[in-house]
Image (cartoon, rainbow, N blue to C red; front, top):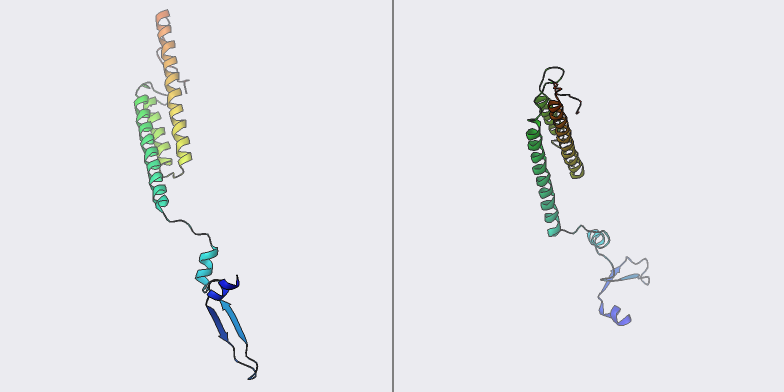
Length: 163
């Protein structure tokens, strides 16, 4: 340790002597501690690594948003395709097709500026499930209607209880 200290340069500060015989020397070895506040902060504050990871994270976030937008658009198109089968009017006389399309448009407009990827994924999954269940219920009602027609009892209006 002593040879190491001897190799280090010394910084000596001469203080104003009180008396001629009283000379005070404060010795401080360089490289023992920081010389400036910036140096102190650099040594003791955790730095955020600036590397390609930041750019890669941004790229992945963009890709995720792009893929969820693509999925949302595909879901919207699927809803429009599925609603073409709902051709009977509701109690107000408006076609179910138009009611369903209007509701889908409202839902998509409300979620348009959503940034949370988990929530967007949840909305897309629940939308797909809703479309699938509506189509299954429609198919079941059509099977019942066909069975009634074959048995001879025909109903003129399709039951709107599938919703």
